Image 1 (cartoon, rainbow, N blue to C red):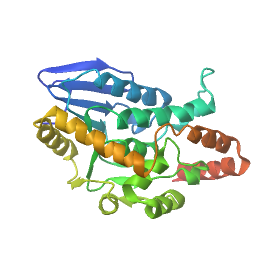
Image 2 (image 1 turned 45 degrees about the vertical axis):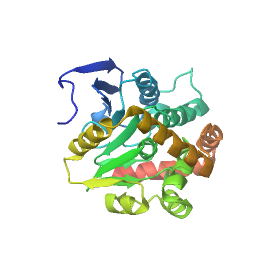
Image 3 (image 1 turned 90 degrees about the horizontal axis):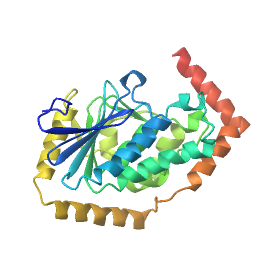
Length: 269
């Protein structure tokens, strides 16, 4: 059965932009902004990092499924964040919140499964890439639009992608900003499994149950060993310079002009 707040034996933890729950040895983090296609606002990024820390305090949880409500996994970073500035957060601070989110999800004690449907864009792709395993519906659509927006891909997204799909594919997808589908994502090694439309949560639940039946120590140490090997391949932790790169782009005239053109073209569409 799919995850939901009415599941038997479920304990809920409250977050402003997420639904976070536990049923036995399996947990769920569900982005709960369907009207915004689960765009990642400043609050959502903070909630995701806090949810990761919360799960690390639930020692019985072996596997956590990360998903989005509605028709999209995530439309990426919520650009409206800049329309409602907070005096407590500089542009650099906002950029760094995304990195801290990615590190928190990547470093969770529990195994994480990203269940992807609809659009998985920009920062949403970084979130999915921070999970251990990824399942996508056959019509899922991926795109990394940051360069067209006049900004670099940050949140330690570049090193994480290089580790998953290699430098050539990373350069192509990040520089061209072209969309790609589930089949191509699987050919790159970004996706583990493709499932029919409307079944990703069932598939994620089945995989979570299969993994949760295994010894917790073996699961955790295997994850730690693989993650340690990944960090030796391409370092991604504490990639704080990403925030400086982003902050410069926000004030660079050519980058701002590119962003305006991109947003104008999307609004026309």
